[in-house]
Length: 201
Picture 1 (spheres, rainbow, N blue to C red):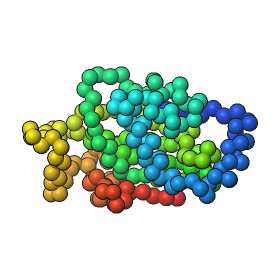
Picture 2 (picture 1 turned 90 degrees about the horizontal axis):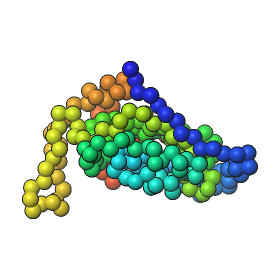
Picture 3 (picture 1 turned 60 degrees about the vertical axis):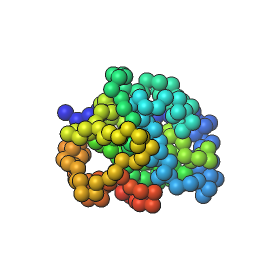
């Protein structure tokens, strides 16, 4: 049985809706690219759900009518949450109208894929989250399947862990979760100048 998806949608009255339609046309040329904003919001949502960030950090990213949902967003804490580095797999952005976009973000979080849908509105002059689709299943924050957590030797706590380029992780979990194989270049965490598997429509 597949995961259920919950949708949280901003509440706009007629006055605000009309204002936003006008402002999008005025603001869209000055807006930054939506892809980094969508990715940052998706990561923040996952970290809030996993108990790694306080829910109020979503307030500044979202419409005020969504703020009441954020305290209920985290999964019940079980004491097993550990810091996790999210790894973007794909980001797809589709412009609905100038200044309004839909984004689908898939992130590898603790060895498990998580897909989120976001609608971003640029009417305020920045990308603001006005709708969120997320799976209601628990966010896994333990070690990836069949992979123990890495350890850092004493005295080297500030030294990055070595990366073994010869290691090829088992990606069957992605096939089971999404019904498709990821691209061959998506199992490595992207560097600052590397692509994120981003698709623009």
